[in-house]
Length: 145
Image 1: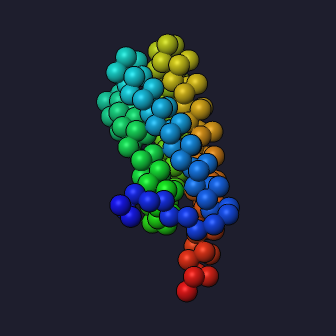
Image 2: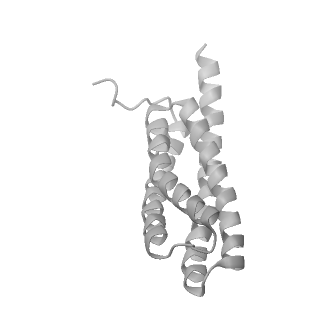
Image 3: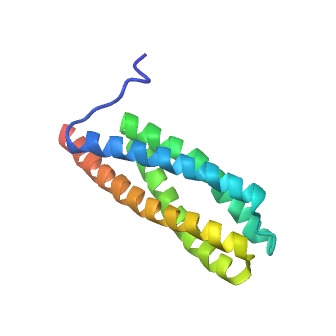
């Protein structure tokens, strides 16, 4: 039963953990929308673009669970892994918007640009929360020794 009990260091770390969990749930919901777009509004102009669209849509529904688990159990390595995913998601969405402007039909440009912009803002917020929590957690572990 100790495996599912929350690890609670104290104070700011706990507040950031709850903020990260909420952010990850929002990321998961946006990931479901991305899968919907990959199915019904595919980017058929380029096979590499479509493969990347599917890859990041699937990552958007799997990696938030790493973030949730890492925040709940305060696992530093999981937070760093999730932080790296958020950076990759940020870069992908910037490239996605550029690719949409170059080679996508109008329906794809409108809908997917809006979702990509939401993903960029969400990635920036999650990077800030995850990096802050990692720093505080690293300091907490250092003080425990």
